[in-house]
Amino acid sequence: MTTKPVTNDFREIVAGRRSIKNYDPSVKISREEMEEILTLATLAPSSVNMQPWRFLVIESPEAKAILAPLARFNRNQVETSSAVIGVFGDMNNYVHAEEIYGQAVEQGFMPQEVKDKILSSFKGYYETISREDMRDVVLVDGGLVSMQLMLAARAFGYDTNPIGGYEKDKIAEAFGYDKDRYVPVMLISIGKAADSGHPSTRLPLNKVAQWK
Image: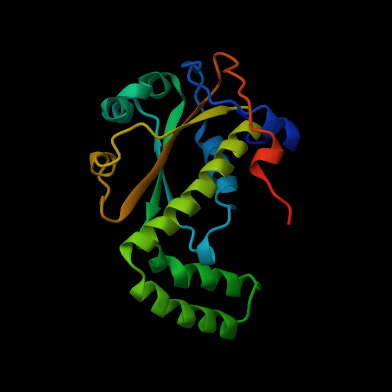
């Protein structure tokens, strides 16, 4: 398996994307390729760069057997895809602030005094933010990384399907996650498409955009 993208044509990546329901079950994505796709996804922006996304790569038969009844209306994607990626938002994402901004200093992206000032200003915010507001933050950031993941997968020649129909209140605990800390954003099936999927229409730009 190659770990290099099969296309860098951005228009083809975006315009050719389909939500695929049927995959070739014989095709497996190597660990190296999956890591490259996920690494590209993590280049997505996030609120104050806290990168609250956490990925659960469900690829073994045993793990898929746990997932299948929790996503019973999307069983085909679970059973035929190379993997289903659970995207979660970490409500305690600030615990990695020192590491994130420390790396920025080490790599010369900012001086130490700027890092210290930034973290000092963030501290009060993260100590007082409500759970509801933090949930909104991680869901937005989780949506950004999910879209980037799907586009990265396309660049490597794979297709995906974002899945919202699953037991959101059960999935974290089913895989040993703290459900109060890890908020499910979506499931994303990924693999080699067994069909071309269905094209879909979009509203014209004049229905969705305004210039002032």
